Amino acid sequence: MARKIVLLPGDGIGPEIIEPAVRVLDAVAPGELQYESHLFGGVSIDEYGTALSDETLAACRSADAVLLAAVGGPKWDTTDPAKPRPEQGLLGLRKALGLFANLRPVRPLPALYDASPLRREIIEGTDLLVVRELTGGIYFGEKTRTADSASDACVYTRAEIERIARTAFGAARSRVTSVDKANVLETSRLWREVVHATHSREFPNIELEHLLVDNAAMRLVAAPRHFDVILTENMFGDILSDEAAMLTGSIGMLPSASLGEDGPGLFEPVHGSAPDIAGTDAANPLAMFLSAALMLRHGLAMEAQAVAVESAVDRALAEGLRTPDLGGDATTEQATQAVLKNL
Image 1 (cartoon, rainbow, N blue to C red):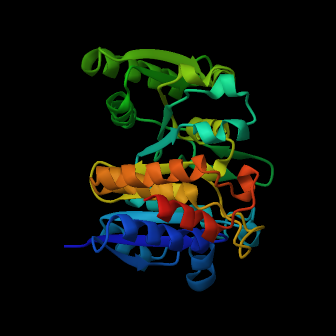
Image 2 (image 1 turned 90 degrees about the horizontal axis):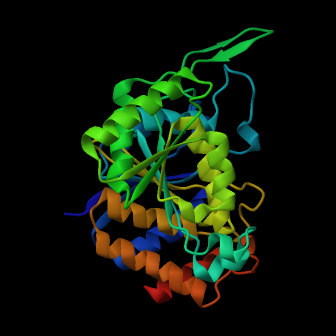
Image 3 (image 1 turned 30 degrees about the horizontal axis):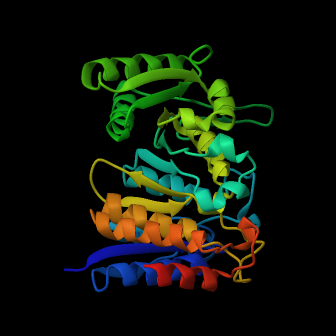
């Protein structure tokens, strides 16, 4: 029986990269997946007045996996707290599906070493995973706003920290680097205490180190090979994973997976909706393809097909494929054809 995939093309370049991803998926898993597309983000605000409609949420809940392209754009930017924003749909979907763990693998490809702003000898051999807690912290805490002041509460519970720590230790080969701001923040002191206890009780064979977030940010660009798994809370993870993305030379290359304890996972590229290049056939679809590979691996237990997609992307780049963000002039369609040819 075919597995049900909900597609959320979203805004900007989203529809232009999700359609090629479906072609890649159909090539690697013919007849095994069926698709259902729904409005999400800014286009959903235009149609329904909300970034995440009840209908779209119900479809996502009943799916085997959710594949999202990109949301947002200047059209919907606002500082008015009463007006909907596309990003609210993303936060709402993560919360509703219980997606507490965001996984972002960062592995600069040899073919792209020279596209990175860092020297080849610094990034060579980097292979790290950022594990970011996704449903707690300052993004979800109580918010207040008056004419002259504003506040955002950062709250974490022991149970929330334990479950994301288990995800990180379970994914690690040798070391987990837990990132916090325990010299200043009470939430970080609890974070450090709970991560340490979970490590000694359940994962003593994995090395654990604690780093303050500012030190971690410096080390990411000075010695990225040092890291195996980076474990951190919501806001720090948001910032550090984008910093880590630039090791690859382009944020257009990075996929991500958001997972819960049960139910469908959400798979999306790290990059935004790039409205400035929408409609020009210049969008890099490779992070979308790699997100589809993460969906095959983590969402559908189709490891062989996931590896096939990833190696096809590697080979296309090794043969010289370069989209504009990587310093070349290949179109979205040419990039798609290059990957399909290598499957």
